[in-house]
Image (cartoon, rainbow, N blue to C red):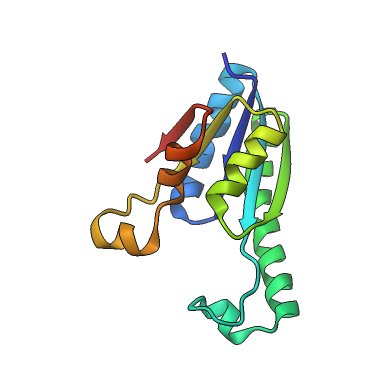
Length: 145
């Protein structure tokens, strides 16, 4: 079936909820897992509260620490279930593009990711990385709700 699954995580509740299901699915398939976290680059003009209060250096340090914490959750779950895994931190302007590029460059055959379930005006304003991955990926995408 699937041999290599990419699991992008932002560390938020939907990703944490999907984590156990994704690791169990990887184990059932005998697949290895690549967990990734996308870090947005620092911008001087932004609405992101972290960028507004941080210098580029402190922003980078905070984002890297957050990324490592998110990926450690995946690592703990994978180790507990005996799933072979690796972790990946990528800095990119567009998370959906980073996800698709990582899946391609790491030779994944499935992208498994959570959906925040944003709809309507919220979905339009905040965007949906999952929807963008679904739209632009040539690989199968498994969405956990």
